[in-house]
Amino acid sequence: MSEKLSSSKRIKNDWPTGKLTQVGKIKPSDVDLWLSRYGFGSAFRKLHISCVQEVFDAAVRDRLITASPAAHLRSAKREKPIRLTPTFEQFKAIIADVRGEVFNADAEDSADFLEFLGLAGLGQAEASSLTRFDIDLDAGRIITYRHKTSTGFTIPIFPQVRPLLERL
Image 1: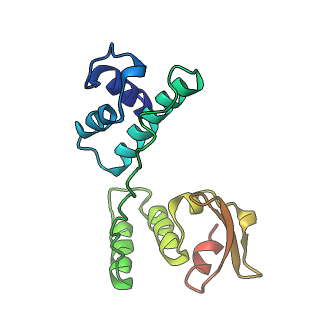
Image 2: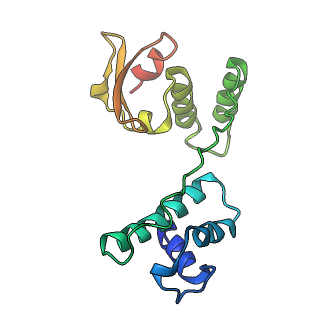
């Protein structure tokens, strides 16, 4: 079930004044009370706020109400997670551990891919979408696309990365 559908069902089934409440009788405090019933994290809270605002915005457009009782709601900013980055020694140990997997027929390829990610400073999405035409060994650069921000960028090919790329 999609998150939006789940949100819509919560509006219908868990509305504090009942599911048969006329939209014109709903107050901003009813919306606040409905939201307060859940202990979501910021991402789910934002989704539910967006969904309830869309419902009331549609009622405003259809002239069922003059103002949305959910207009005052604001989403909290998502917390930035703490992402632990391994030291270079830890990184090399991880790669060696993957290469040493005896029951994995693809251990060498997996280790090469992980090593490339770490040495090139790319994420899985960027690296997975690379083609041979994106890699210019003569100019010493890789042209890629950051999916998260929808922007292209160029990275230099460092000496440690060149042997991995030459195997392609």
